[in-house]
Each structure stands twice: as structure tokens, then as C-alpha cells.
Image (cartoon, rainbow, N blue to C red):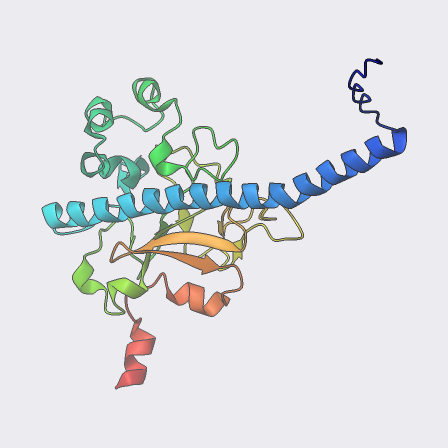
Length: 259
């Protein structure tokens, strides 16, 4: 009687061509998955950016309720030079009173004592989509007459005849080069009314050193409005429309046109 033992399965063997096919399939799958993963990550970072701006907008309203006006764009020293930023002034309304209490308000923002307070990144003022932000801010004011920041004066919401819902309070500016404590922002009379942002054809905003709104978000930048809502502004927005969104009311020449 013959013993019949079961045949052992032959070991799997990959030919060189099969390995190439396997590598190609894996590469194809990764090529399909990576954009989706990156998009999901950007959505999360963009959501955090919205939360940052929303927190700033609510803090501005709480400040206004307490002081009957928004903070100054900058607090001047005896020679009317910028000494302290609005970013410091609103800290008590952003659950950051510890930083506010340790800040030396009657010293320059970059004094030795103040740099001990601010020589570290502040996530409340930084967009998480912006790489290597360091100690710089991603959120700026736009200073100038008829804006929400008529430095060295302060504005009040009742002056916003165009409506708080239509007036930009704080927009994004990536690669600003502005320390988050520094009393420096965009100037209405010299800035470009454009939005520089990454596009499908380039990974950077292309802003360079221009004085303009910009972000690390594809297709546009975010801004908090005077009613505290946050809106995504398309990079395709016209310069005239963007310019008007920073004005709180009509000028004398415009007022005369309505008479």
C-alpha cells in the first residue's frame, strides 16, 4: 500500500517584472491617497485658523463692550512712536491675561524685559498652515483713516456706516516678518489690494516682500469681520471690492454724491 503524502505548496516566487508591477501599483495608490491626505490635513489647519480669527473677533467685541471702542492700532509713546500693539491690548479678553500681566506696558515692545515675555511663538496669532512662522504673526490690522484702525485714534462700531458685517477687522498676512508683539501692521495708503495665495500651479503664495494680504491656504486668505464672523476671501477678488471692505464709512467726497 503506497503512502500518499500531501504535496507541499510551492514557495511564492516573484519575477523581476512582477516586482516592477507591484511597485508601480503601490506608487499609483500613494499618488491617489497623498492628495486626499494633504487635503484633509489642510482642512484641519484651516479650521484652526478660523478658530484663531474667531477668537480674535470675539475678544475685540469684549474689549469694545468694556472700553466702548476697539483698541488702538498701536499705543504711542511720548514721541507718538508706536510702543505697544493691539495684539497685546486684547490679551485679557483672550484668556491670555498672564502674558498681559507680565508685559511691561511702559517700555518699548522689544525691550529686554518684554522680549523675555515674547521670545517664543504665540499660536493664537499664527496660522497653522504657515510653515516656519517662528515668532511672527499671521494676522494683521490695516491702519489708516476711515478704516477700523485709524491709529493713533480708536474706532467705535457705531461709526461703521457700511455695517460691521461688511467691514474687515483682521485679515491674514503670511510671511509677515512682524513679531507678534511688534506694533506694526499694514498701512492702507501703501498696501496692494490683492490676495496672494498658493495655487494648483505653485506651492507658495508668490507674495515676496509685497505689502498685501496673503496666506498659506490654496486659493485665498481668511479674515475676521467686525461682527466677528470669519470669511474666506478668494484670491480672485477685485482690488476695488477688497479696498472697500476695509473702510468703515464713506468719505466726504462720497457723502456729497448722495446729497
